Length: 354
Image (cartoon, rainbow, N blue to C red; front, side, top):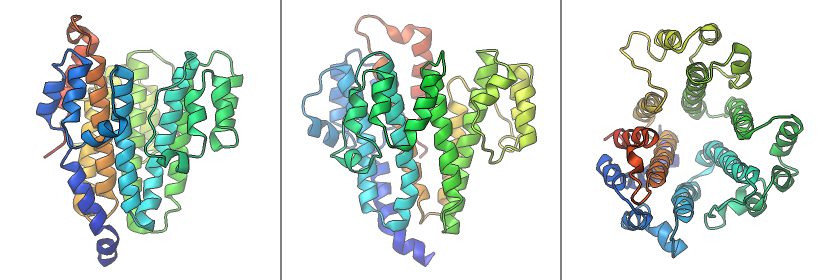
């Protein structure tokens, strides 16, 4: 514990101060009622967590710019925590940075497949210094070929080239492959972490996340796509944490989404508990992750756990803000449309635990 106090006391204190600036449920209710992007931006400019990033970027007028600035606030927070960290916390934070890199590639890939470059902001040069690829070249890519060239010489090149040679590949196929690659990679790297406490924390956090990525995917494959077992296995992350291989096989073999849910309730995540699985809005998954973080942070208060929890909550806050921003269409009442009604429910129900 003494080592943890010396290594993490200042970092955990800084993280608590940053976490206090996360938005509350009432704030989401407010932003969900805005009918103009201007009002949305004005609201965020007044929030302590977002005022600095909007000030740094100056004039922000349209939706694309606002989304980029909001996302940049996550990277800025990561930079602050990384620079404030010692050697051990930094090694754990690298797992998060690897995900940010994959997310940037996925976002730019989606735009490249549409023939457009991506409007992403840069966090004070941090990505340029630490990313494995030329970020500006990735952002400017207007085709899959250009993006592959931008990541030439990196670990992502071979994966993207292999996918490019396969016929009929769409964005979802690339996104699945990148996510699977990321989780397989970090799971192997977590096993090499020398500090036992940190390794156990990382295993619990990322292992739970991987299990639930697989659960959500299998449910959707059955509920919405009527996908066969072979295709489901192709898109499943080949890692198990609390889900036993026999349980996974049983879930894959279920004949309906309803039967799948019943079997999920018999797994370690719900056994003996009253549970309602609602994967469509991802509330069940988020609540499982929040409970996981709460338990770990209570058991290991002076560790990397509170830092990872904050970055998780911040990432989801940005997802909710982006969802609210997408719903703003002056005079169109888009929040009355089914897709946005569900998003509005998601925004209002999701808020950080007190």
